[in-house]
Length: 363
View 1: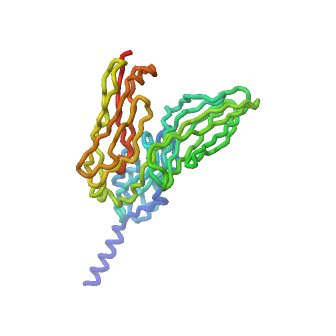
View 2: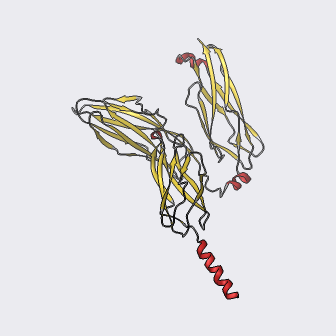
View 3: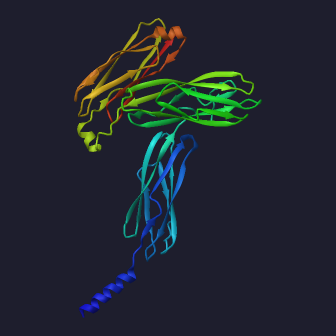
């Protein structure tokens, strides 16, 4: 009797069977993708290597920028299917790694897929526009802003070119005097009406100075008659420290500093002859570690940084003192300004903060 029961249980298990979800690949690397060109797509092919129909009950991702689609019908044994994953790079410059979770009636009820890549930008340029020109060549930007980059990391931006001449090819040479910036390609020839895209890569070293960096890239353009045109593109980058020493988010919560401050100050509209204005910004450390202000700067000549605390201990605050000069607006013929004061600090949650100061004058 016992033997008959064992045989019956075995036959029942064979009749019930199981579904098996087998992917050809579980990781897709997009490489470099262009932010302004919109969403990119990839496919994950799979086979039901089991003995009963496979049903994908749900597929979701860890971010709204990543959208999967999958077959709703059952996949018969031996049949194939595909999961299509789209990634929207808009507003997400730099490296990305995203997970897609697949739930099914397979023996392994949950499986993970991985997409990764690097989103390159036009450095702040408006989509599809050329805002400057050097001789016969139009440029997408004369200033390129790299994404915030930590030590021992890389980031990249792209510069678009367009040969607008009607009289033959032009030769474009790009020279970077900054050893951290590489240009690819460094030399390119363009036929009339031909566009091109140059990639500028920023490779930050372990000893690169933390803070804001402004470096020019030189362009030398030769037209088909040998006439030379020279231009310059300014690259701007922000280097922050490498926070990879934090093992996980829990460790950051236990040990990291946090910067808290007001980030907008409106001084209203003043007569042009008004005296200098003083702004005091209270910077509070609401975290657990020592807050260090690594670098502060402002590019506007009407705004001066007078003093700031280099370190703020846990639970205390310090004062950033700023001077704003209405007389400079008068000299420059400006009606108003609203520049940013950039603060680079060791807060891993937000290592770059910006304080905006607005002032208008009556001439």
